Image (cartoon, rainbow, N blue to C red; front, side, top):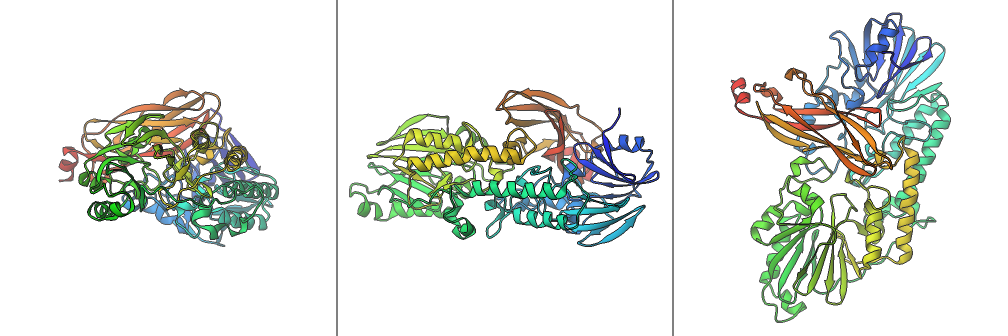
Length: 627
């Protein structure tokens, strides 16, 4: 089989696989940049290269490092700032701070499954020679905190191997890698690394390379034009984000430069909530005329204390009506899975043994959180007594409750319409503030398009016409005018267009939705000698069917290989591929927690080891082998 490569100069080649691998040649020896997968071997054979002297990596992600066997004598060089994520990546997989309550994202995506041996580390300005070339290191953070660019001066020209700073003229590979906090946690930092990215691109521009060679993407022979186009497109995309961002309500100082900009929705003023509501923490509480209470979310034990104080005190008699002498919690609704809404639910359910109700999509996460890896995820497990679907209604005292899947702030989110006492109240979880929509974290799966994400949410609000909208973090209620609703819808439509242009995909969601490919369960216990089961779930964001191929990559010590499996997913739908994995009966205790990467090919495009699952090994074979 002939491999696919191109020649940039007499001594420099690029192998084009699921990533671009640089091949600097000196007769039959080579230095490689970002080798990944087995196909580069074919190219090396065609070029007559028999030995690899050195390997360089631009950044620590698994898709540009995995699968290429390192010879014992091969030197491996990496960015100094990312060396621990090459040498000691096990510290990431075994540290709970990188598993639960995820508000910070550095590092977080595509970590190596296992550490690799590193001989050299590089910092800004280091220079060395190899064969016919001189190499210079530029620190170019953005895609990751410690990314570097390798400048190769060879054959009278200068080439920049720039990692994933840029994909092509005006394009990036993804933006969820740019999630980074500025004055806040990374969680609130949608496109927050764009300033770093801009500075890095300008640094590369200043050294006047002949060509840019990205890890993912197209070799660019006009770097200046490519960089200009990307910076212009990023600025336009970010403007369309800020225009309707709810974050302007929480952190106005972050957006001073955008104040009164044309096309940006003005921030609404709030309105007082009805007297029969109470709000503390992230919890809203409805008090009925009968003295029963309907509670929404419980992220802290303080919520339980507040309710007990209401039950014990005279507030109800003073502010409502004298006939209410006791308060009994009879129903509990969970808006979404985030830790500040669910952390204390187990204690709440013990204290107030009432019926717990939530949307079917939310229930899947909160009843089995270990099965997911998502922002702000809590290990607390919730008992759910009733699962709702779109439009399910029930009566609670003088109120009519109607539940909806409400994929706003996160895809795993419900909304609740409460009608009664002369008002139509919509409890939107964390999905809106007076400033707009809460889509400041790409990991939350804020999808763009018709009848998904916020477009679906806004259409529902237009249909329901609530008198009050409630956010779990905001004391005041609010609403939106028809013009403001249309502004948000129009801006989302423009976002879909401009973000699609930003990525090398046929729809924006592939570059924005970090979890369009995901493993379920993400983490599970497996028993030695038995069979594990893993489902690879894939969302087809395209308007046509797509074919996906998946293959879990088992540890080499297991001495087994799974065959790749294929499925065709209808347009704008979810599909899956199921695997049964035979677990060896005896394994070394040092491998008790196993990372299983999954190699993905989608619509004919190889993505490498694109996602992963975690197996936690249990069983007598492990104990016996340890002794």
